[in-house]
Length: 150
Ligand code: FES
Image 1 (cartoon, helix red, strand yellow):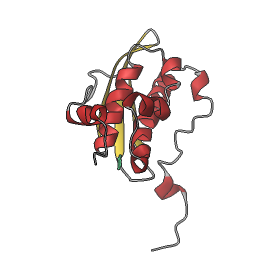
Image 2 (tube, rainbow, N blue to C red; image 1 turned 90 degrees about the vertical axis):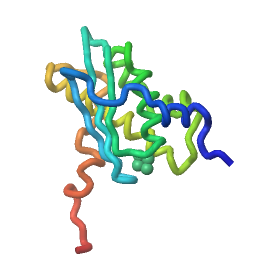
Image 3 (cartoon, rainbow, N blue to C red; image 1 turned 30 degrees about the horizontal axis):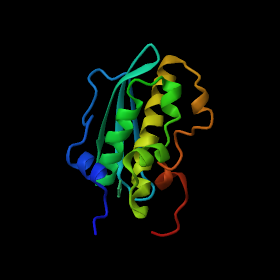
């Protein structure tokens, strides 16, 4: 009967790393093209290693649980290592989400990429994991394409 496993429920009820890192070195936001919800990730980076990560979201419980897990997973990793953390890794660590909620886990993965991109831009870094990253993908849906309805 339960849609969510205990780990997901626990992280939804008691999420870790909620809020904003003080004096953040990087900030990334991502809006889901699927549901319209938003995610913000702030990072503290020292010597190329993520020492702190926090999230704020308008997303649902699945987004909260995913972001809690994703931020835990990237703290202590180098920027390149963090870029390799996919939403699939987060889903596996969570023990899965119900099918219609899988897109919610994409929010944190994409916001983390956006934050690392922001850090790379500010610091003139070229990161292998950002080679194919397009900061305007998806998020610009509403003004990037002509709409014929009025
Ligand atoms: Fe939008 Fe889950 S429904 S983040």
